Amino acid sequence: MTNFPFCEGRTRKLVTFSPDQFFTVTYRFTPRIIRVHPGDTVTWNNKTANDGHTVSVVAPSDIPKTAADVGNCAVCNPFFAAHFPNGGPPQGAPVLFLDDLKPGNAPFKLDSAGDSLLVPPPGVGFPPTASAQIAAPAGTTLSYLCIFHAWMQGQIRVVAQEDDRQAP
Ligand SMILES: [Cu+2]
Image (cartoon, rainbow, N blue to C red; front, side, top):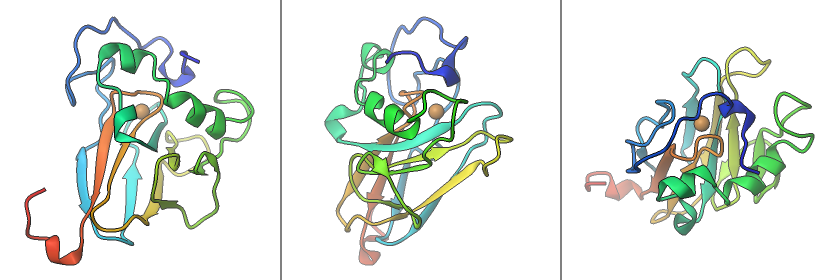
């Protein structure tokens, strides 16, 4: 699956890639890297007007690193299928949270690859926010991306309380 309905009509030719500088549209996670404590809750707030996004945790080696990777995001496909079991949006109700690529129950927790949040766009019947408790232990880095816009990439660095004063 290479066509994501949220992106239709928006793609232009992709020439170069570097993190935070690779856009077909200027979507990004801000800040791109966050530091949290185990058990903290993180809320993603969708400030784009028309598009949904996901926070999809993947293995660091699966993060797209080239324009070709972004344009054909293999790791995005199973997330897309699991979030939209009835087909691409807007058909059917999406699954808002995935736990290991299966429908998850509230309270949402992120702890490993395969966990994913859908952050809806405003005005589609869901709040344009998504929250999850970070359930990974200190020392873990969770790499994540948006499956619709795979250049949107972020990291959740889980640190112990006593590590607060260390640099990221
Ligand atoms: Cu996105």
